[in-house]
Length: 251
Ligand code: MF3
Ligand code: CO
Ligand code: CO
Image (cartoon, rainbow, N blue to C red; front, side, top):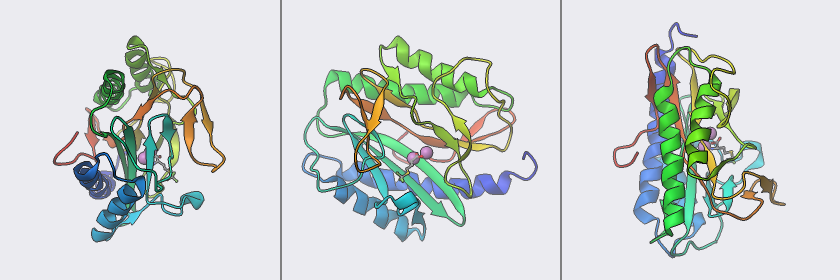
């Protein structure tokens, strides 16, 4: 794996930058009155303009180009005519497929002014992801990533979703290993130079349990409490990591 990973890193960065750029476009229009379908259209068009594909579209039958997960939706929310209103928080998750490689990223968007609790949930979720990313280097254990996220989040009184996880990514959208966002330091497989995977913690204000709605996709918190998520695609190097889904204007 560690031989010759440069090409996979370069290609993932190209796909990742397109995905991040789509989220920058979303950032420009995320305000009260916009529908999640409009967000989907912006993502589809931006990615198409870069001659890339939206990997979620038709993935296992998913009908849209991105996931829009508002308020108590944990992940895999489907863009629809639903109008976002003042105080909503929404995760937009975009995956671009370009030249055979994937870049997967998501961010939270605040619709107008949001509650203090929602602000704190969003900040804690972002910080937990970044804290875990900063640990990444050849030889650490997967449990180091999970335990860092879990302890940061639980110290703030929030909970880590266990039903969904990060994942290896590359020519395939989702592959080994699973990246759990909870766990025990020093346990689990060791990661090695050249690996590419996502870290994408889903954090709930209340209980960690989720359920999936009848559409077969939309995952919500069982207790209807707010949920937040951020995601980056990263590569492992000998001394650290590279983030492939950075953008010019955010994160
Ligand atoms: N982008 C999601 C992830 O982070 C997967 C979405 S699959 C879809 O892995 F089909 F719901 F789009
Ligand atoms: Co992902
Ligand atoms: Co994603």
